[in-house]
Length: 94
Image 1 (spheres, rainbow, N blue to C red):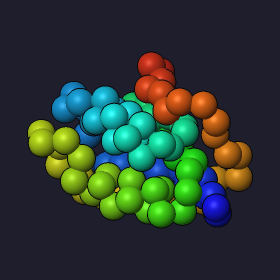
Image 2 (image 1 turned 45 degrees about the vertical axis):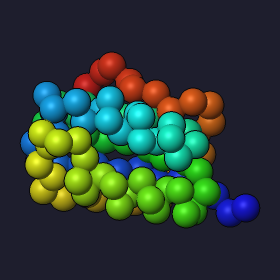
Image 3 (image 1 turned 90 degrees about the vertical axis):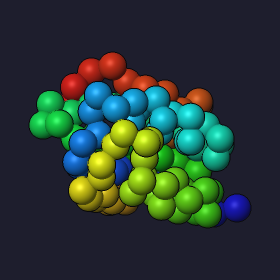
Image 4 (image 1 turned 30 degrees about the vertical axis):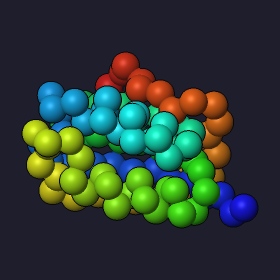
């Protein structure tokens, strides 16, 4: 099965609305590895590794996010370092 790894930056009203916790739950449901963290500029950044189909499902879901979020943009770039292990929330500002 083909895998891919992407780095994503989500902008909009995405901090203080449980976006990281929602992302962790969705990523774990899809069996993805990686992490999500707040950025000091108000965005949320994440890295996802998994099957092409599951990563694509996650990317589509990021445009909505949790109920209180308002997503302006989801920027996606390929990442060269695959992640492993359970998906996690990082507690640092990037």
